[in-house]
Image (cartoon, rainbow over all chains, first blue to last red; front, side, top):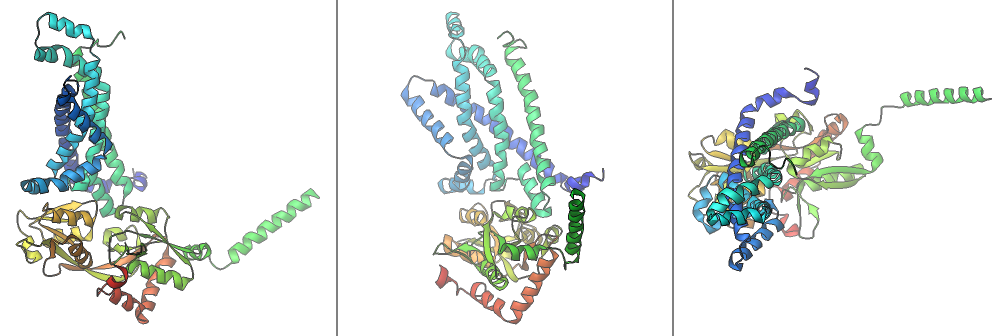
Length: 231
Length: 266
């Protein structure tokens, strides 16, 4: 294994295992909570966006365009530095919270568009059938529309989730100690780019592979193993 | 005829390679600089007085004028490349520049990867806080529950860890300006930086003050590629020369120890 030390000095990485593990945990926490929040907010936004009433869909449409038009980094700065001037008590929050708020608000806009596409893709006959057996709006959503909608758009949802996981790296700029910060720390203390950035790239890869497996389980749960088999 | 030509060219090749060996020394990095006619330096825009853009849109500062003086003495043109703090060392190691002319402290970890000149100048590390903060000295900021900020993995972060162990350290990977912004918006109680930087922040933000007492004094040096011994010793020699003829003191008095530069550049 000595030859490997020339390219990748794992002894140096070993000295930073604590920081890497802590950073990995913070990344998982920030991404996980942001994912739950952004899908929840995204679902509400998608339903509002599909409403026939302008009072619902117009503001949501404006919000989605605003989020898509501005860089996430700018949004993170606005929330991190701007929030205390609106609500002084938020100044002493742990920086993780403004970070999660910014990530959730950002990703929710993209999630809303994906979920909306999923809802639109559910065949009309399904909804008419549900209506004819006397299901209410909430029942139709819960049992007929949403399971199929989510199963239909799982690939783009997974893609957006992967983007969300990678976007957590931007939180390093507001001192959240996630996996990117751990990499930056190794690189600035030891000046070893390979050891710093290949290690954290591998961490992101591990998260992605886990997500891939998870999305397969969710698809089976939502729509059964034979979903889309014949199409 | 053909074989004669071949023999001749072979003899010529041998003769040429022999001359090549016989010539004094191989081309080193100093020769490269002289041949190129350019001294390429990597700088960061950390703000006055070390490196910044002045009111005429010209890049200047203590590190820049020092490098300009070197280029003039060598009779070459100075080429300045502006990098992010994090990109300075990679740019040097990738051979994009001949040296880093920034306010970089020669820490043992950095010196394991780079070759540092002897210190060019020293700076004082201090802390700053909001003007209406109850804190008066940096020692008061060293308390449980206090949040202190510094540039990530900088010598300021190291000083904060060493001298303010009771406070919680927040490391900003974006640089010192982010630290000042965070203090100014009340995200953290105090920031750690050097006195010159803090003086600038106090003027720019208007709601900051410096905390009493210096925390530490740290050397700042220029850095070259670890294989460039000639350039390293050239730099060391240069510091001796300009210290002896007082040109270094003039620069330090103008930029570092006074506000004299402000009326020309601000």
